Image (cartoon, rainbow, N blue to C red):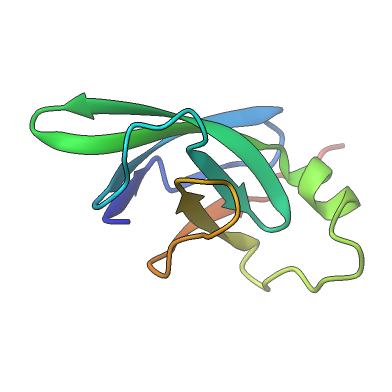
Length: 104
């Protein structure tokens, strides 16, 4: 994976749509993304000579609720990985950071 756009978002948002510039992935119906333990289907596309995967990642609250005791990073960031088959994920990873907004 080369880059992620955007690479941060507010914790109060329900979901995020992110675009991941990738190398080596193929246009297969099994393309997917993983953030923390959550796997979502990806959409492959090509733009401006690059390969991209578009994914929807869940809200910060959803990830916290499904963490299953796994420690959340102190900076509220999570690793995003991509896969052609939904099982074998990339060795190159990028972080997505949630900006935690305290609600009154």
